[in-house]
Amino acid sequence: MIRQIISLFQAPPQLPKPEMYSLRVESQIKSRYARTVVSSRLANPANKSQEVFFSVILPETAFISGFLM
Image (cartoon, rainbow, N blue to C red; front, side):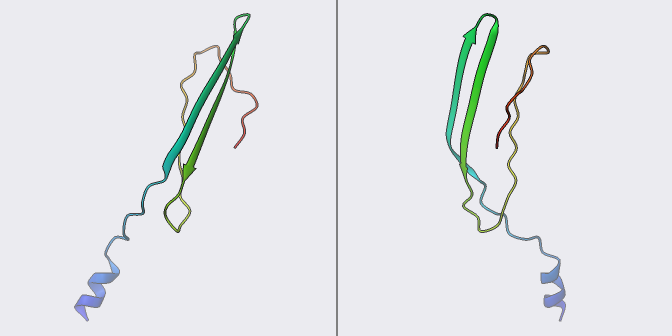
């Protein structure tokens, strides 16, 4: 019985991490404005959904428009 109780408190096994298999960055600069498109593709090898995070550092005067997922 003690063995059954201990098994209830064990942490779940680690899931394999999502893998990025493509990253593409395209920039066009015209008249003081830059248009940058960042595309990435990921694969989730686990049989359970997982979250991934995407972060970008922008200059203070920059902004994001047309964000798609």
